[in-house]
Length: 80
Image (cartoon, rainbow, N blue to C red; front, side):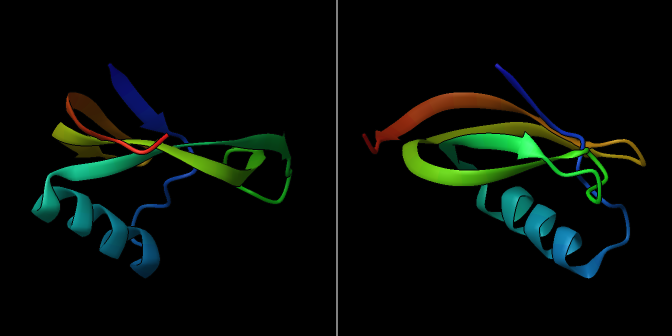
């Protein structure tokens, strides 16, 4: 399964720290939430997290001017 975050901002220190943590840790937490319009955000959307689903291994972490992307690998822990 592929994940893509169009809100990624290349060169932003907060995003760069986040991406480094993903690359170094090799894991992410899949969450669920409610989406709403947020024209002030790069992606035009905002999310309010409402829960956690699972921890996954990640592979092929890529960033560019458009987005952050990676592949979800093995499901390691269920959080629901």
